[in-house]
Amino acid sequence: MLRSQTERIKDSETRIFKAVFPNTTNHYDTLFGGTAMQLMDEVAFITATRYSRQKMVTVSSDRIDFKKPIPHGTIVELIGKVSYLGNTSLKVRVDIFIEQMYSPEREKAVSGEFTFVAIDDNKSPVSIN
Image (cartoon, rainbow, N blue to C red; front, side, top):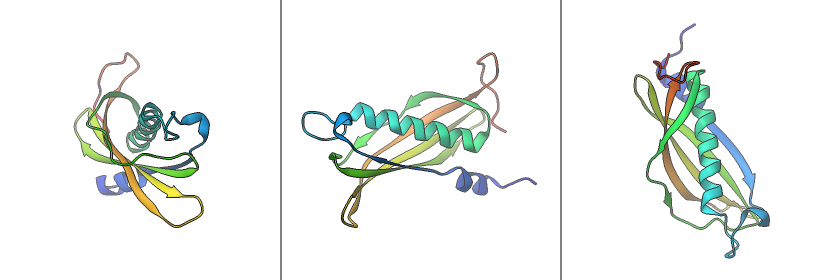
């Protein structure tokens, strides 16, 4: 059964939760920016792969906005969603939300987009099915 593009985008949305522990923080007790970017790329990769079910590689990251520091002792939710589809490439938007452990407070901390290309066994670009 063929699914519509809209259904595939919805079904490939990826959500991952992480606790922010001191070993992932800097001297300000906030999550390292590089660690946040690594987590975002991982979520984006999973999202791209779930959408295409093909081999995907990161080719670029677009503007990444760090709006709020992410303190240790919080929970973060990373949400990846396909935001653009091309012939051989797609973009995934990833947002990181901060949740306080012991209160219902939640706010967006980081946003960015990652571009992926579908590749074959020879690492050449191929059409996304």
